[in-house]
Amino acid sequence: MVKAPAERGSVQSDGRGEEEFTCEICVEVTSNKLFNNGGKCSHPFCTDCVMKYLAAKLQDNVGDIKCPAIGCDHSIDCTPFVGAALFVRWCDVLCESAITETGNDTCYCPYPNCNELIVNECGDRVTKTRCPNCKRFLCFKCQRIWHAGFRCNEIQEIRDSNDAAFGRLAERNRWMRCPRCKHFVELRYGCSIVKCRCRASFCYKCGRQLQRHYCGCDVNIEACHLCRLFCLYAVIFIGYLVFFVLLICSKIR
Image (cartoon, rainbow, N blue to C red; front, side, top):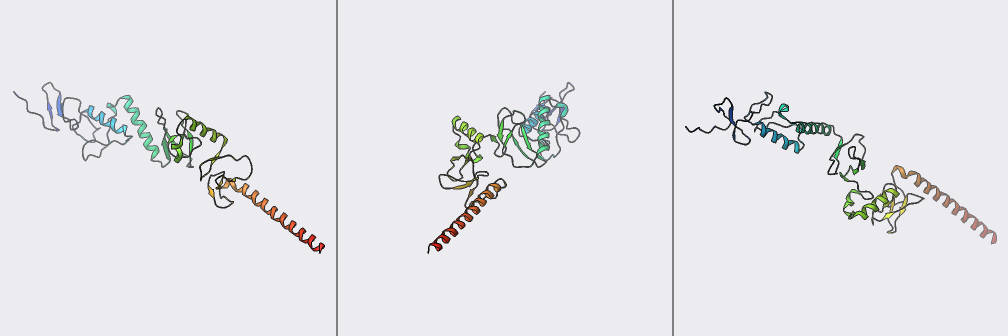
């Protein structure tokens, strides 16, 4: 006697007391354990397909995984069937989802063997930071390996290890790059408003190009006050000098 094929979604007995059904994911007749979504919904899915579906969603960092049935909005509850490794991964994804929903800036460690989630809890603008897991430096802004001595939009200039070493040297000595010609400039002492060899003036503290001898950044106020005081004394000195010259000329006459 030829057995008629089971309809999609139907459940039949195979004569040995085990139920056979057609899984709506792999579309195969199987006696694999029927997936039970904790009583939330009932669909003919085999547990193997549901586990593969769950692993694929977790690979995409999806924490709230919905039932794979079309039009079903129930979340999957398959904790009893999930293996230890998959369960840990699911917990990590749920934790990361909860953190990102707080509104804090986040990034992932760019090193291939780390990929740790890093949270900016202070709310300040962060660039150079150290991964709490692998203890290596990264750029929080562009989410890449730390590019010492170079800005985020200048990473393409790091061509080899020599460029990277020079960048570390510039960072250690706190050299600044001219915003016009991009050459490094070293300030040993004096006012923080410097003039590059390309004749461009910029603030050595914040790196902004200036059209006048003043910058509004907080760290530069003291230096600008010193320059203004020097200019004031210079004007007073020149005034006295002119006065004495005129006085001497009047006596000669």
